[in-house]
Length: 104
Image (cartoon, rainbow, N blue to C red):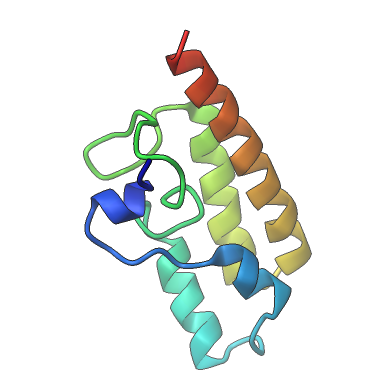
């Protein structure tokens, strides 16, 4: 399976790696992550399986995933990286539930 990011022809960003070894707040690397986290294709939700239903701009159709993605972006912007780690876990958990529901 491909990620949504790959399906859109873009390179995946390893958010877990970023959060394990974060750059300095306000650095060029942090600002790049802020930009990536703001786009549905490259945010943590973009790294999910491409079969998850999405809008034309890539927003997950699942309300819970959408909210988690917005929270993740806010946490990256405000450098709340421990919260972002928790949110990625919740995004991955919810995406598994959505995919399981699609396969029924």
